[in-house]
Length: 247
Image 1 (cartoon, one colour):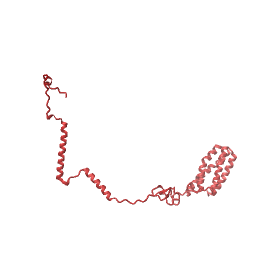
Image 2 (cartoon, helix red, strand yellow):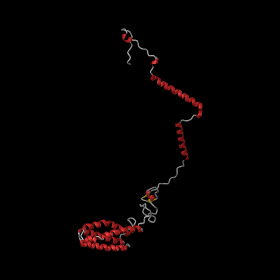
Image 3 (cartoon, helix red, strand yellow):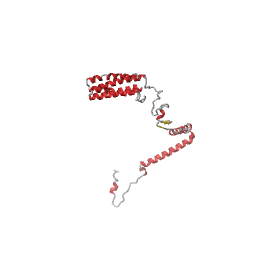
Image 4 (cartoon, helix red, strand yellow):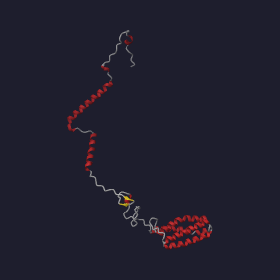
C-alpha cells in the first residue's frame, strides 16, 4: 500500500517495541463474503421449491425440456408398437451376363422376348424403328442419286487428265456412297440387317466399288486408258446392281 506509516513508528525511542495496528472484523475482504451469500441464496431457494412442491403435490407443471423428452419417448414407443413386423424378404437373385432371373441388376430391364441379352431395345416385332421402312430406303436413294450424278463428271476429268480433281471427286463420294448402297442392298443399317455378302446384290455392289477403287489408283498414276476402262466397268456393274435391288 502507498499509505505512509504512522509517525510513532519512526519516532519511537530505542529499545521500545513498535506498536502494531489491530485488524478489526469489519476489515474482512469482500471476496470472502460472496461465496457465503451465494450458498445461502441456494439453500433458501431449495427450501422454497420444496415447500411449494409439497403444497401443490402432483399438480406441478413439468418444465419445457421435460415435456419435450417425454413427448419424444412417447413417439418412439408408439412407433415401435404400431410398426408392422419384419417382412420375409425374398432371397437375393443374381444373373450372369444377362442369363438368369436376377431382379435387381441392369439386365432385368431387358424385354423377356429380346433375343440379344445385351440389348435394351425392344424386340423387332414391337419396336418403332423399322429399318426396312420405305421412308428410310427412299432417303438413301436420294443421297445415292446425288452421288451418281457427281460421278458422271469422272469421264471429263479423265479426258482432260485432271488427276487431283478426279481424286477429290472419288474421295468425297466413295465412303457415303458405299454406306448408302449397302443400306439399300441389305435393307437396313448395321446391326439391324443381314450382312451376308454372298448374295448376288452384295457381290455386285462390292465389284462396283472395286472398279471405283481401281479408277482412283489409275487416276493418281495418270494411267488414263486404264482409268477410262475402270470407269466403264464400274458403270456396267452399277446398272446390274440397280436391277438386283429394284432401284
